[in-house]
Amino acid sequence: MPSLESEIDGIIETFTNNLKQRKFKGSRDLALNSVQLWKKIIGQMKWQNARELMDAIKQIGKDLAETSPSETVIGNMTRRMLKIVRDEYAMLQKGKQEDSDLQESLQKILTADEVDFDYIENIPLLKPAIMEHIGEFLTELESSEIDISVQALEHIHANEIIMTIGYSKTVFAFLKTAAKDRAFQVIVAECAPFYHGHKLAADLAEARISATLIPDSAIFAMMARVNKVIIGTHSVMANGGLKAVCGTHTLALAAKHYSVPFVVCAPMFKLCPEYVCSLDQDGFNQFASPEEVLSNDEGMLVSRVNVYNPIFDYVPPELVTLFISNTGGNAPSYIYRLLSELYHPLDVLL
Image 1 (tube, rainbow, N blue to C red):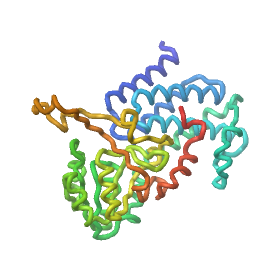
Image 2 (cartoon, rainbow, N blue to C red; image 1 turned 180 degrees about the horizontal axis):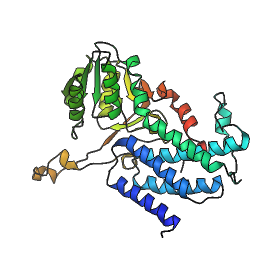
Image 3 (cartoon, one colour; image 1 turned 90 degrees about the horizontal axis):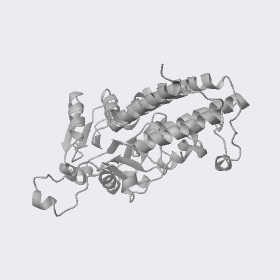
Image 4 (spheres, rainbow, N blue to C red; image 1 turned 180 degrees about the vertical axis):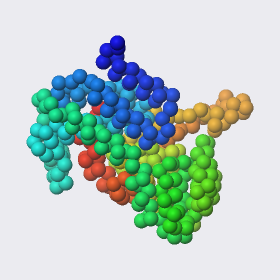
């Protein structure tokens, strides 16, 4: 009979292998699987107090994040687990949730480490409370796409021309919901060299939504006719900037030039408390095969040039007009406040 530790190691190894083989379909699927993994680990692991559990979560979370550094969702879910443990411990200790007061001062946020618990008391009710909280969080994740799409009618009006880029399940659900009551047109930039925009255009056409597919080079020319840009994103950084599919920065600059609102559909689990520098491409980006950009058939040319094929773009917060999350709409300048509610200041660095 396998020991409990080897069982947990097996669960983690299976998750890591699936991550390396890219078996998860999008950020939401990865977030759900991450939380389910944590639920199994916390449920099966032997721990005496909250401090022991938090140290274990941090260590495992750090190892998982290092497996795929560009997947910020893994780190985000680890931080949410730590916040859940802190909240439940505080609630059982003091009878109220730690840092849940909406009127808390900036000074309290900045000095959070000074009033932090030691988390060493053994509380028998802590484990069931944490498991229940994780169950509620899983329900929130599962309904995040629907919660965003129900806001569509507040943002999309009749006869508008909407532009988007690439493929996003959240954006597709958002547009599909709006199309039930409003007639509008969608212009889809194809997002070369991966051409994910082709799938979105086909899905929109199948849903009987008027869709026009354009090459990325036509974004600026078409922007003058557009009423609104609506996109999805891979991550929302701590300053309100985006880590989004390559080509999004071009789209954002064109929208800024023509004063077109630039709207981002991003569920709360994509909010990351880290800052990125767009110059640090090794730490920030992923690179795909250059074959997509310059074929190996071009033998003479390939040997003379360095070809890069980045997957992501960094979009600075000043180019974003509005974030639509599963809890409502927010300006980029409000992201810091949402982050303080989602994650504890001591858990930003795993």
